Image (cartoon, rainbow, N blue to C red; front, side, top):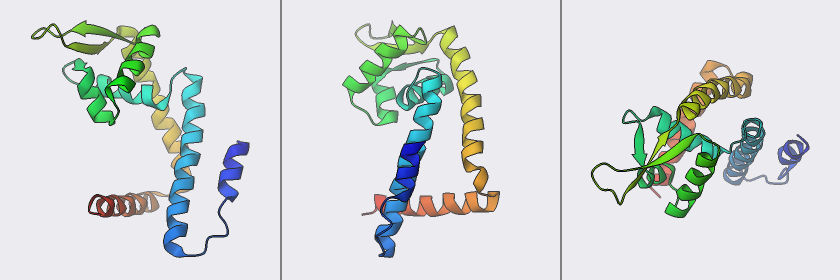
Length: 157
């Protein structure tokens, strides 16, 4: 947690409100990444692996083209291939050929992967509740509204 303390102390010299706001958002993002990295490490996965697992878990078709997963995650084909390789080595997913076009590869969760993902989704909910416990529901909803407004502004730049 020493890194979190350092992150919390940095950039106190900035006084201009717009810059300070951006710095606080970035610092919060870095702190959240640090916390989630340690949480996910307990389960032998990264946040990227978690995202792949959730995408597959929530997909009603049960399997997905690797390119579809990559598009949802906004990562390159090489990145998704590496992620699937590592998840496959852990026994959480496997590759299958597409029924319609044998040249295409799909990813599907194993039973171990489904059970693992169901468990970690529940843990994720607990972690996020713990992280956000310092804010009441009104503040959380305000924060969601502010972040959504900022995101919309960024899209329109």
